[in-house]
Length: 206
Image 1 (tube, helix red, strand yellow):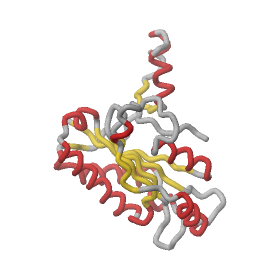
Image 2: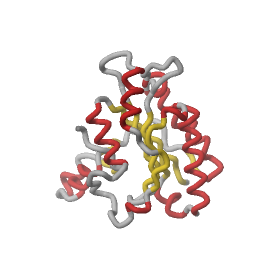
Image 3: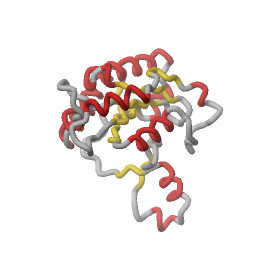
Image 4: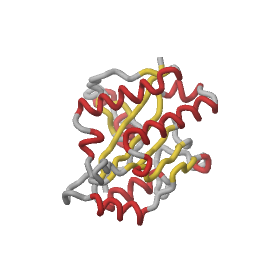
């Protein structure tokens, strides 16, 4: 069975956000992306840095507010590899609908369909602004229980595409792709010390 993938990362500060956006738009080197295929990426929502920063400052409640949430939406490789263009388009459409339902269309600041990595995926950046106009990542993501519910709901939206939710409460630890490739080149005894599973590249801390 193929699975849905729905991951989030909280971002604070203009530098951290700029680095993450540069990664999504391929304005910086991405080690696991194929430069020959980068031209095939689709920018679905163009990033407006000036407006986004203005909206963030207007919605700020505390100096340490989470200002942006980066999301990655995809599937396990076997589904994406076998999917037709129509099925991928439907996955894209439903993913956008899900973002609009959960975060509000006006809060989607950047959206890119990446086709230059091993598995096609959507990368989104949203401002977690609530109905009262305040930055409020807790309302959108909450704790572990709320995040788990979001993953449930995302999987339910994709169910009739032949996809299901991944294992709940998995103890597998995901690592940055650069660290993963470092580890797979270590001697076998070192690799056995820890089970590592690669994940889609996210920008390193700024």
